[in-house]
Image (tube, rainbow, N blue to C red; front, side, top):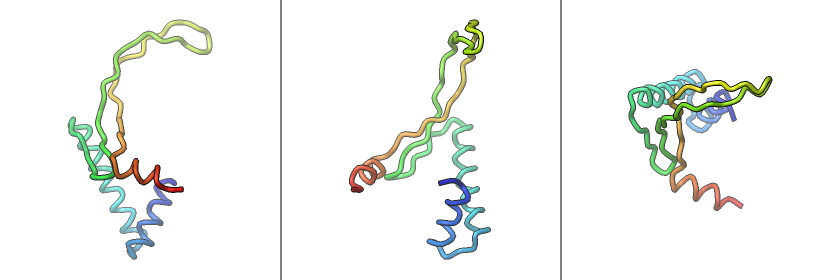
Length: 93
């Protein structure tokens, strides 16, 4: 499922125009992104938690020629599924 599919689902289930559904999805995505950029944790009950993790600097290898390269430290987004999502995924048969 991609953003367009999600927009279709929200439009159909919410009985709202696709333009409004797309706007709502964009608001949610932007709000989550802004919170993570500000160093905040975003928790959606029974769904999961979005956080930012720090990945340390390390020495890697270029797969084309085998030479060593320095991979800089970076911040990465992390999603941890909540209990409700885990239960839903494992109870569906």
